[in-house]
Image 1 (tube, rainbow, N blue to C red):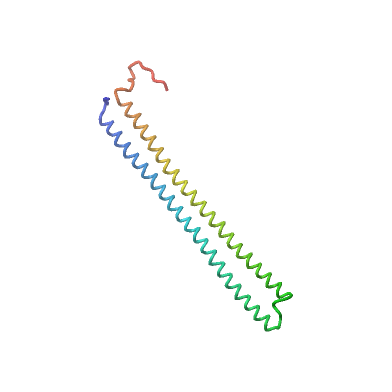
Image 2 (spheres, rainbow, N blue to C red):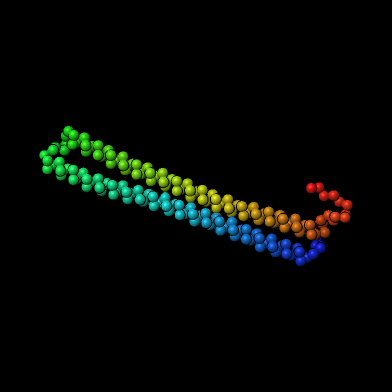
Amino acid sequence: MSFSNPYSAAFTVATTAIQMKQQSAIGKFNQRVAERNAAILEYEAQKIDQQAEFDIARFNQQFRKSVGTVNVALAKSGVVITSGSAERVKESNNLEKEMQNKITRYNADVGMANKMEEARFSRIQGQVARNAARLANIQTFAKAGTSLLSMSSFAPKKDSGLVVAP
């Protein structure tokens, strides 16, 4: 294969190589950014879980303190805690405590699920960025091949009488 201008061919090959390397680097960088974002989101999900555990423990502690204060006040006033309205209030308070704990846990679970979904989406975006860079590499390589072919002696000449279909 002979080229009409060997410098043009060398320039095309060199710029193609540089461009493909830059495209690959950009794709890898964007994928690393997406992975980092995903890791941050997963960490945030862990923090939501830890915060929920802390909130539940703090609520339970305050609840026990409040129950103790009420029991002391009731005992001082002579009310019997094991029967009647005092027992119903105690049962109602325990149900309220359980409900509060379940609501806190549910909200944390929803928050964690959202963060994990965002993390998965970030990873998908990273893969898309990487694949876009690969596609750009293929396109760059194809354009370079077309340019080199048009410079070679195999390309039809304008005055050769050959008709090239569009």
